[in-house]
Image 1 (cartoon, rainbow, N blue to C red):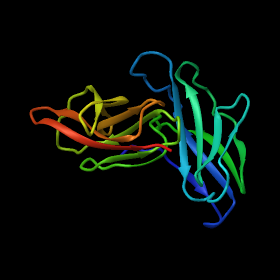
Image 2 (image 1 turned 180 degrees about the vertical axis):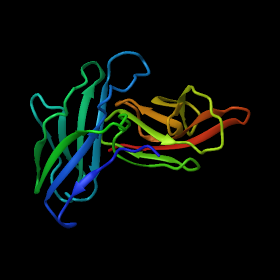
Image 3 (image 1 turned 90 degrees about the vertical axis):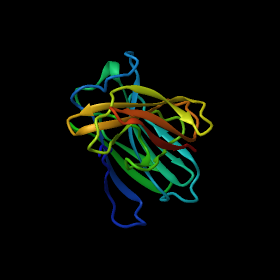
Length: 215
């Protein structure tokens, strides 16, 4: 299954100093669905380590790294544009967030393909659940159940009432590791529950439930 990797070193559950590596794609920028340049977000979310601390955002001039406290959680992101993909990993930055000091280090990783950031869970037979930071956009890929031949296509997600879920799309493609479902979400997409229907060759539609949360 595809996922963003989190490398986190902490002394204990109550530690206030963290070292966080955020893998970013280094072979080439992700292929856009629209064919135009777009921002891609790599990042991670550490839950419940800043309880009681005020919301805060830290950015750096000329750096793609940003850090945030939101509702007691820590969010970290590296935002890159497909039109100006770096040839070297961005320089690490130290974020001071309340009582937490976090060294955020972007690192190249050949297998990273820039999917949606944030905490998420998925298996082919259950709901894809995504918890994203406010205003974050991007993509996430999930391995589909083996033993089927899927159709490569893009479909608009639908809310539970069967109306189009604006800004949320699903698409299927055959990767080197098997068939994959991509979930794409714009920064303005609303939170909610719904589904995507993707095609299986000779087996009708295959529905994937979605549950997208946002602060």
